[in-house]
Image (cartoon, rainbow, N blue to C red):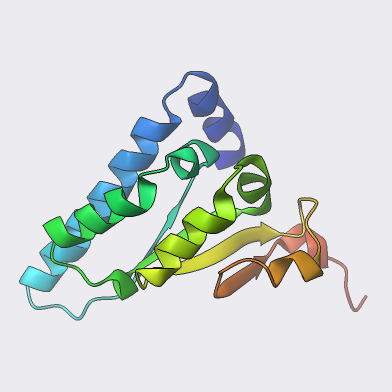
Length: 139
């Protein structure tokens, strides 16, 4: 499961390479579908804190989109609260990505320490509330 696998990849120092490979393969697959004449969906790719720490990450994503001739609206990048809190310049990097037209979402909201008022400062369009946060509501 991801909860077990991702920490191991981070410990081993493989998380950035793995994240880059997943991002590129996802965009390559979208491009392949487009070339085959299929209508393009958007694809969601999770980001690690290490990827977001790269100051050139927004430019890197832009280069990949250009390489595969994809519009930014076809990509959604998912981050968790903990990634935002662990990355010093997260808000600025996310703002750069959003300015490119890339959709941003917060995944597993409610498991970290951010507040609803903090959300107003983030340039995200989608909020995915963690299941554990709402489990039992209405019982």
